[in-house]
Length: 207
Ligand SMILES: Cc1cc2nc3c(=O)[nH]c(=O)nc-3n(C[C@H](O)[C@H](O)[C@H](O)COP(=O)(O)O)c2cc1C
Image (cartoon, rainbow, N blue to C red):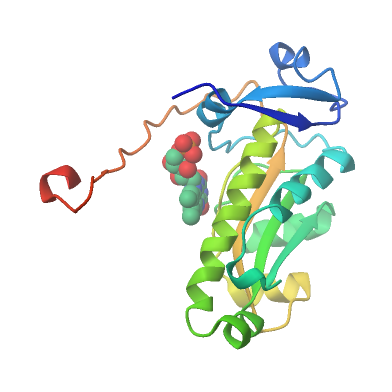
């Protein structure tokens, strides 16, 4: 891959998790190597309970807002959860939240708006849009020295009740956000290979 350099306006985190990152995080504006960022993005399942500065959470929200959205209909919502009691309540109904994250970033969709403005395909496009926003958040978090991951919740009625979301909302992603626990053993799971096809599908390529 050619080295693509992105210029990002990133605030200095108060407590960089990784001392090696402190140097590159010490200036407000810096360049990030896209290839390095993509390879550093990993699912972090062990996060420290240490609070995440609000300005970093805001940068994650800004990253989500810059993701594409079908027909430019504003059906995607982002919820920042930094209240301990609310996080504990969500953790109670959501086994995929493994550690005690100090914050959650939740991406939800107003399905009625998606259906009204985009039609039936809006139910699918909105899920794709949530993934696009989530990936933006994940990359921004990686650049900021934060850990996160995707989790999908099945207890939809429960999380709607906790968050005060009307029934028409679908919660697509619950992303724990925090500083990675340096003591946690990283499970370096090898990424699944993506079958790639050129011009048309070839069955052997899918093996
Ligand atoms: C839609 C989606 C849902 C996921 N849900 C979970 C989850 O509930 N728990 C979890 O530990 N990881 C979850 N993951 C993370 C994947 O397991 C992880 O991305 C994959 O193993 C590749 O590892 P990497 O992200 O470190 O490259 C999810 C990923 C995606 C795309």
